[in-house]
Each structure stands twice: as structure tokens, then as C-alpha cells.
Length: 260
Image 1 (cartoon, one colour):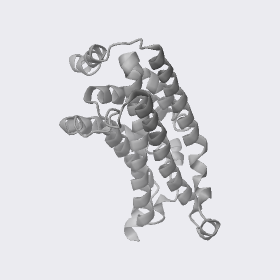
Image 2 (cartoon, one colour):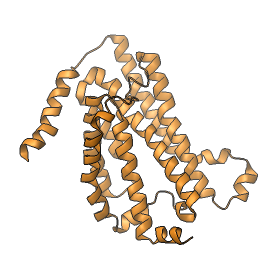
Image 3 (tube, one colour):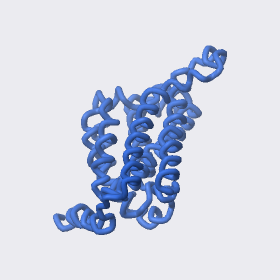
Image 4 (cartoon, rainbow, N blue to C red):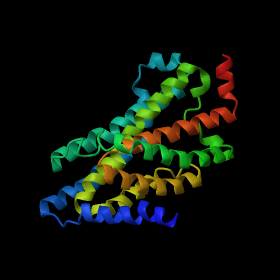
């Protein structure tokens, strides 16, 4: 058991130290790196303050006529968040470093090869999800969209949008903040990335914020080792969907939908 933990942690870190050496960079590259953190900070501000208000851009009559304006607002957040995380970061990485989305981990190779390992990781997390699903704080927080149980259409559209949003989240944290910064800081880009990732969970249950530190470190190692962010997308989406489903099940909404 100890040997296995060593292979999954210390040995993986040693490989990353070898594959991603520290680099000082030229003065121009150092200025470009400063831009990385400025762009990242602006993207985080956009996703915190702007995306939740995008629903206001809808025609007034549509907003007034809709009884599900809170639902529409959540969908707007998913769309805005996805673009807000991907577009500015992808454009800056291309302009400043000549890096394509593929260079930032948006690739299939490296993902399919290790798919059984990702399923194993989710299997480790699943029992904890079931255990904490009855917690009051968990029940108040999830599902993230409180109107998702109104109908099967509401639920399917919401979960699809919610899942797509994680492409943006992973591209930002395990793509842009990881692969660009690793060019200079090597694997120490992982804890740099984990810091804002953990803070993103502060409004959620405390155990989830702590879990974000562990998950962020693990997914960072996986992304750098496989050069793909798709493992993070898949695991993140599976966990989020499971949390929504467990909360809806605990509240009896799944049974209501089955009877409708």
C-alpha cells in the first residue's frame, strides 16, 4: 500500500521535475508571464461578476414571460463561464507564447490510454459523495440549479450545460494556468494553479474546499503527465452530476420525475 502511494505521488512528482525543468526565461518571456496572471485574474473576475448577469441581455418580454428566470440565469452562467474561461486565455496563450488549445491540453491522445485509471479514481471518490450527500450543507448547495427538477427537459438541459462548463473550468486551471506556467516553474505550476482553484470552492461545504486541494493537485499531475485536460473534464463532470443526482434523490425529486 505504501509502495503504491509512493508510485502515485513522489515518483510522479520526480518524473515531472525531470520533464518540466525550471526556466528563468528572457525579459520578454518574463513580461509575457506577468500577462498570464493578469489575464487569469481578469477572467476570474469576469466569471464571478459578469456571467451571473448575462441573462439580463435577453429581450425584456422573454424575461417577464418566463417563470423560470432563475433557471435561465443559471444556463446563462454556464455559457458565459465556458467562454469566459476559454476565449481570453486561449487568445493570450496564442499571442504571447504561440501555444494552441492542443498545447494547453485540449487533446484526446493521452486520455483514452489512461481511461481505466480515471474510472478507478472516480470509484475512490464515489463513496465519499454518497456519505456526504445527506449533509445539510450539501443539501442546501445542490443541485446547483434549484429548478433542475421541474421537468426532464429542465434536468437534461441543465446537466448538459453544467457539464460543458467544466470544459472551460479545466481549460483555465489545468490548461492555461498549468501548461503555460509550467514552461517556467515546471511542476511547481501545480500549487500555483491549486491556490485560486481552492478559493473557487469557498462558498461550498468546507470538505469540498479541502477536497479541491487534493483533487487540484492530482488532476494537475495527471494533466502534465498525459498532456491532456480531458481526464479532469470527465472526472469533474462525473462528480458534479453525481452530486446533483444524489441531492435530487435525497429530496425525492428523482422519484417525482419518474412518476411524471
